[in-house]
Image 1 (cartoon, helix red, strand yellow):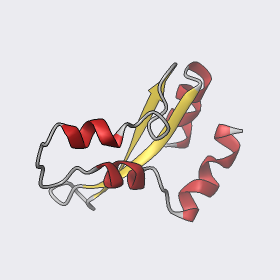
Image 2: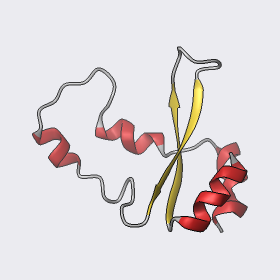
Image 3: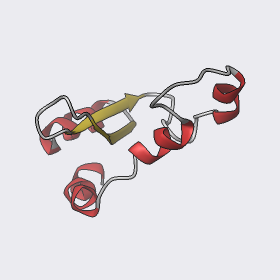
Length: 84
């Protein structure tokens, strides 16, 4: 994860790691990468526009979207040198 994220950070100015729990996969805990040259996954999220769509999902909410980018301390520690 560190090696992959470091490569992404070198190419994309906005690079974030986020997490999701997927119980059908081994261990259920997965990390993903978000990379963009323009959009920030939290700062550019427009929760009002999402809500205006009146879509009812059984999983996704704007709060969950933001929360997915809140990483446990051990992961934050692993990424400090990568994102510096």
